[in-house]
Image (tube, rainbow, N blue to C red):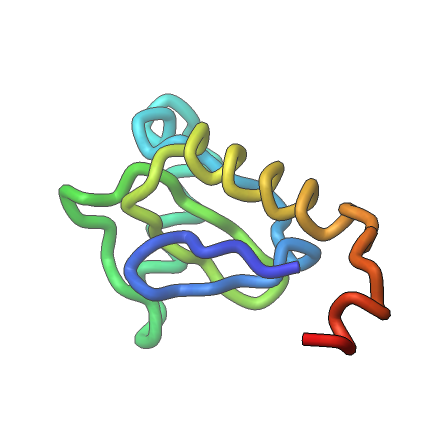
Length: 96
C-alpha cells in the first residue's frame, strides 16, 4: 500500500520506519543530528516552513506538509479500503 504524503509524493507504507512531528526535532539531539546529517547529503531537500512531518524510510527521508494525524487517517482509510470484500454480483456486471 502507498501513502500520499503531500507535494505529489507517494511512499510505500511498508518502507516507513518512523514519522516524527517536526516540532519535536529540536527536543531530541539524536533526531536533530539525524536530520542535519540527512540535509548535508546532496539529494535531500531542507526542512522549510511548510514541513509538519518528517518521514524516515529504509532509503530516504521525506518532508511532508501534512500533519502526522492526517497521514495516520489517510493510511487507516487506505487499509480499510484495501481490506473491503468485493460483494459485487459478477452476473450483474456482465449484463451491463
